Length: 175
Image (tube, rainbow, N blue to C red; front, side, top):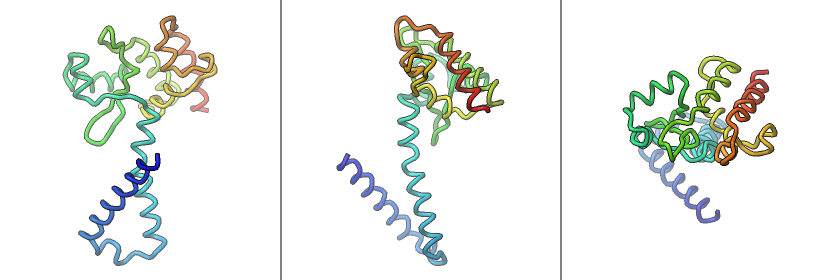
């Protein structure tokens, strides 16, 4: 971690210095506390994609997903809109967690629409896709301590158990 952390810090500091050198006037009227708050917000924004990437797990961009399923980009976004596919908005693309796909059959797992429907009913129209994506990565007592991802990946999986676990979790979130 030492080298990766130092690389992150060095890259962040280099870009910060470049941006400030080009726009020195941005800091001219700020007091220390305001500048410090902006610095902390910037660091949080820089680390957020790494954290969410870990929570969401392996994912594909729109192009890769469309190619995998053999559909257009518009068809993918129609499925997201209809609640049959989870799309996580990203910078310049939509990310599609790979747990949604049956890789052998090259299709969307049928249980995905059920999971999304459960969260939509409990949390209202358009629940935060990051909540659902991170839920799939988290151990669930209703699934014998396995994450929904691990449960769906096991050969003897019962999709209805995942739907039941989703109902329990979504109800807790809604309360």
